[in-house]
Image (tube, rainbow, N blue to C red; front, side, top):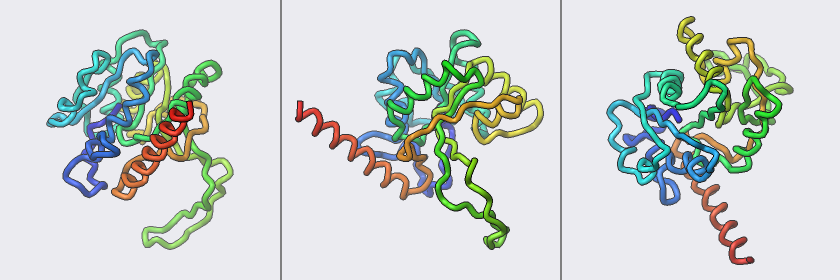
Length: 231
């Protein structure tokens, strides 16, 4: 989990992954689905070198969790975390954004099942439904590209340990900076599988996203309590 960003776009002095959300921090929610899954044997979180917040969270005491120093770019943080992952090159690793607190267990399960049919890896994604506009620097419409084959990438993204490490090493050697792990793998000629995700699996980027995420998590807690009461 890359979590070394300062969250400058969020407009707060506290990095967005440490903002409070429905009683926990954003990063604790982002980790929750994996912490409760017994198939997850290790979790590596890449933090800023001067991070003083993560160690104070209860989740930091979990025996499966280790932290490493992240880098200037997302790819640097993922590479640093990957270097700390134990196991074999054939083992599957999942990369999840620290700012995506609403991922569901169903999404994770669907992603894991994709390993049976996609040796090139897979990622959660959503097909675009809105009309897309390509703009000029002055925000004038330049063209309306077809949305037919366009998807919006989400996380987690899943690849074998060896494949992802080779992809990130290759990108760095070429001086290229991927915006997500799938792009680095694509640059090696592979074609990861797109696994339909949940539209509620949002990324907290701005303050409005935090309010939306709180509403989503609150609705889920209410639904769970109602279901429990029914039993």
